[in-house]
Amino acid sequence: MNKRKLKENVKEAFSSLKKRKVVEEIRSGMLSIKQSTKQYQLSVSNLQAWHRWYYRTRLLKYYRPKSAFLKKPSQITVEQLKQELAQAQLAQVKLQHTALETMISVAEKQLNIEIRKKYGSKRSRS
Image (cartoon, rainbow, N blue to C red; front, top):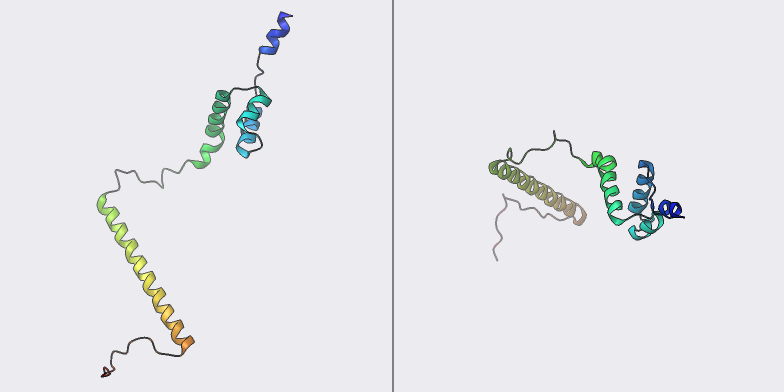
C-alpha cells in the first residue's frame, strides 16, 4: 500500500514535445494557466519555467534583431540625430508642398477658375 501512495505522489517526467504542447495550448488560449495546472497536475512555477524554455528555444531566434542592422548607441551622436531630424522635416515640407500644388491643380481643373496668383498682373483698385 505504501508503494501505491508513493507512485501516486511521483510526478511524471514530461518530454520536450509534451512541454511544448502544454505551452502552446496556453499561448493559443485553449487553456488557462489554472486549467492547465489542474489538467496536467503542474505548479504555476513549472509552467513559467516551461514558458521561458519555450521562449528561449522556439521564439527568441525569430525576435532577435540582426546585429549588423543595429547601431550601437555610442556610435550615434547628437549631431547625427539633428541631421536626420532636419532631413525628415525637409522631406515632410516637400511632401506637403507637393500635396498642396496637386490640390490647387485639381481644383482649377474641376472648378474652371484660376487660383494661382499671376505675378505679372496689376493690382485692382478698390
